[in-house]
Every structure is written in C-alpha cells, then in structure tokens.
Length: 57
Image (cartoon, rainbow, N blue to C red):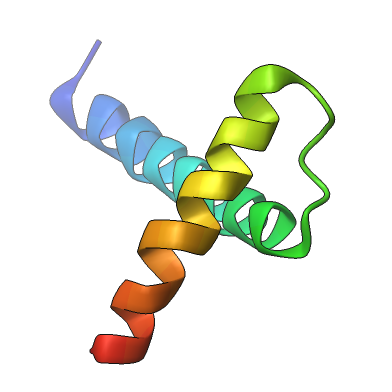
C-alpha cells in the first residue's frame, strides 16, 4: 500500500470520527444517549463537569 493512499484513508477516517464525536456530544447534551448505566454516568459527567467548564471559558 502506498503512503499516499494510506494518508487519504486516514484523513477520511479522522473526518468520520470527528463527525461521530460531534453527533454523540449533541446526543449526550440532549439526554438522548440511552438509559443504561454507562449512558447515565456519561450524561451526569457531561452536565456536572463539561457544561460548567464551557461556561467558564
């Protein structure tokens, strides 16, 4: 595999990952990320830690 083709694939992969994380952050902010224990923990962390940090910045 040539370096250029691998580089292009990695750039596209990074775009897909960035889109996923942005979509997931929106879901967490809206409380739409599920009802499981981990989802509740994630939402709690988001609301108690990340939201106040964004307000400070």
